[in-house]
Length: 490
Ligand SMILES: Cc1cc2nc3c(=O)[nH]c(=O)nc-3n(C[C@H](O)[C@H](O)[C@H](O)COP(=O)(O)OP(=O)(O)OC[C@H]3O[C@@H](n4cnc5c(N)ncnc54)[C@H](O)[C@@H]3O)c2cc1C
Image 1 (cartoon, rainbow, N blue to C red):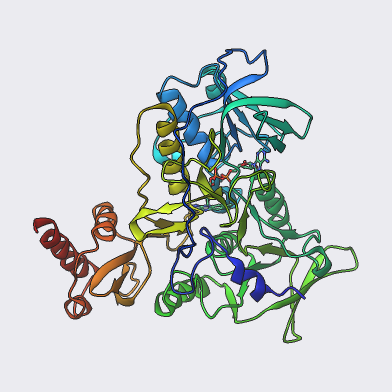
Image 2: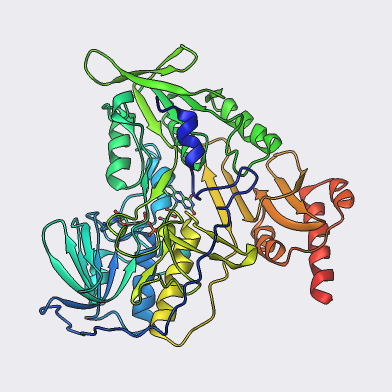
């Protein structure tokens, strides 16, 4: 019997395959890629694509594809040369909105397209479907790629199109982990969120819902539970771990957030496993049966138990997928010349911690896309050097008693020092072998948030006892800043 605890141990939230103590995927035996100098074997620049030869093809139309398209435009290499093939009926959009502003109650100005097309998330031009037309980028919508022929450099789509490519960028993201059908994972009223269609389906349930149960204590679970509060629904969040966001939050930090959710009426069931989801007489989900024999009523269930890299149809064709995603080097080149992978699906060398990682986070989707396209189109050879960054924001709808926004930079390893009372500020510092490795800050000022990446990247030596004695978040950040200045002066 698949239990919730089993599923959650696979991964959930925004990054994959984490060690229990760390937020990022563990090092794997990194294969030596042995890249020979890459030269495109096929080039065509037909502006109208009337000969079906595409110079550059991106498979997947999500966050990474949107930012890659912008980079192609910036390099003057999009017009008549770039084609994006996507499963969705929409041009690339900022996916994180789906569990945030998209789920605002309908009378509280929820986000809708075209409001959140890429690249609004980074302050760029909004790339509507017309933007792609104007830039001469061919978009093939609702037609997923189903197979690839590496030798012939062709892709076949679900509708039977045969696309020849010169260079290929795989940007297929992840697919949501689901409960098996035999335990009720596909019952009407059971929701998963990956795309707009999923979010629309959830909204139509929320409009009628009375009792919502959110399964999973990661980002998705936390964000959806906060959204359900906005809809004034009876909301319960359940997960097998002892506390929220166990991969990142310390127990003490999680307790602060849990208290806030409870003040907003959310009920918690922790350390429990699901046996199955049960249907009522109308076939719609009506209850969850737990492993301990108890039952919880629910008319709407949202499952947020993680995601898997969308490697199909790129498995078994010679690409290295043994690491869980598609393995690339620091320029996002796979082991097959002319094929690249970016975003959630790419397993890349995380230089700063000397390990291979896959990061399911929009910041990495943006940066990996830009880095890959620049390397592909220019003489850039410096390797990707990513600093892990995670954020979430909840309770942001109009009328919410308190908006919550935290950011984390670095690695969550070693001992922790927590400063602040969550009133609203709080900060957690991770210190390993006397060095500051990671920082999380809630409700900081713009200036304070800006300090975090510099701290996490520099990893200055820090006096833990002095930090512990700080009487406020501001004072603790000043101590960290002074440690950074000492390191920079050396
Ligand atoms: C609900 C939700 C909330 C999130 N919140 C946050 C957040 O708060 N902060 C954050 O940093 N990150 C967040 N993320 C993660 C972030 O959205 C992803 O890291 C980011 O979207 C990855 O970009 P990508 O382009 O690699 O994948 P995606 O954006 O998932 O795009 C992949 C695209 O490829 C398409 N596709 C898949 N297979 C095929 C195929 N065979 N042929 C053609 N098309 C295909 C998919 O349909 C999709 O359109 C969230 C994700 C979700 C689902």
